[in-house]
Length: 207
Image (cartoon, rainbow, N blue to C red; front, side, top):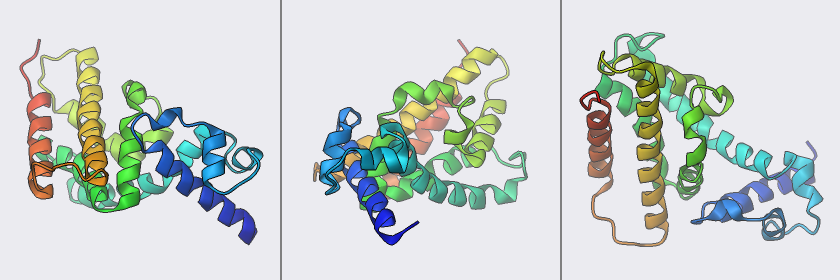
């Protein structure tokens, strides 16, 4: 990719990440993103990403790669199907690689964007491109460790609500950190509490 084209692509990603991360940011228009990136023509975004959704996917892909690498390292001791991991280890492998991003400004923007995609979470077992192979390993392993009495549809529902709980909490904390809102729990305690809550929700008595 020519140097100028690469610079334009990076400028669009940076501008998009900043604008989309704001509360309600997914309503940001292509024109606003292009202008924030210092570009004069809206066709620049379509040229590089095929449209607004393509830009969102590109932003997510950058950080998903880091998360998947960290998750793969955490899962390595437990076998290809995570057969050696308990529920606590699996939930930790889900949350910890994302929580690290709270310490990085671009990571916080990513977490805020992801938390606004809540309507897509019930497709976690369908949208394999967005989910990632190691995340999928975690989801299926968690699903297998849910109470035996749960029906298949309830198992699916619990994974979906787990995603809402985790991404919602991380996204809200990311926005609070960037807005200098009071933070009740220090980072380590926040992550430990979110992990414990997630395990408790997954282990709830069958309905």
